[in-house]
Amino acid sequence: MKNRPPISIVIPTYNGQALLQKHLPAVLQAMQPEDELIVIDDASSDSTEFWFKEWKRDKTKYSIQYIQNIANLRFAATVNKAVREASHAYVFVLNNDVAPHKDVLESLWNCWQSYEQPDTIFAIGCLEYEQDPNSKRKPVLGGKNKLWFERGMFIHSRYTDMKTGPTAWASGGSALFDKKKWEALGGFDRAFYPAYWEDIDLSVRARKQGWEVLFCAEAKVDHHHETTNATVFGQQRIAYMSWKNAFIFTWRHMKVSEWIQHIVWLPYHLFITGSRTKGLTIRAFLAAVSNT
Image 1 (cartoon, helix red, strand yellow):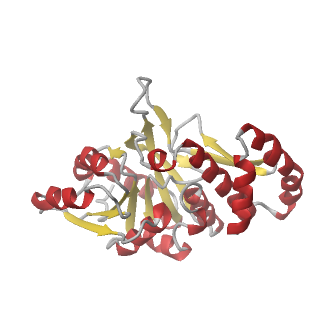
Image 2: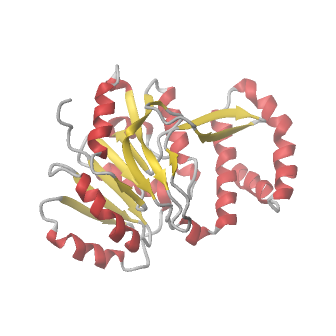
Image 3: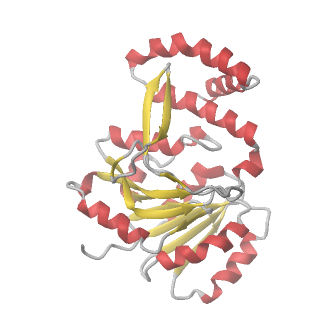
């Protein structure tokens, strides 16, 4: 397999100094001199800026860029901004709580070039070893996903087999993207603010353009699930955001023939599920209506 091209690595962060300090050494080990690292700080209130500038001082053999948002934009807009600044044709988007294995970029590129029509690829996702830092259980494998329409809503889950091949979406936390195709789609849609479902939406829009979204079992990362979302929003707020964006995604992507099923099942989702979530589903639906 021929040598891979230079790649831009984009890591969004918010109050993530401890996570960067923990996982950036693994990022550097995965880089070649021609690659670039872009850390984009979403208006953190911790000391990320000062720590990062000191940290990168002796990393002169690497191309490292630090971008700081003036205001907090959240995930989609922050990543979009960094991708626009990327110098290379391929962009590896990585969460700040993910540690890539040393050969992850070579593995992704090998998967890309081994595909029968590499020019049609939009993105390739990684095999994630998902580990809860508070649990002693073995890591769960993730990164290969499926998506289907049932009971009037789109539902998603992970595959049980993690073989290289097509996936419903490439995770926004560990995937390699074609920058030109990303820009043609406009990147992540800010309608899914502040988070969740934006990477699923982006991959579905890519497939509608005839582009491929793949999963590479040889490209491995450790996902420690230490993201700041739970701390910033809390579990109830996260559930609300996920429901709201699930409604927006469903309205945007379901077929005309599926609207009847959606309407028939809507009372179930609003009232039965809403009663189990203390009204979260109903509030999420109303918020989705106002944002659509």
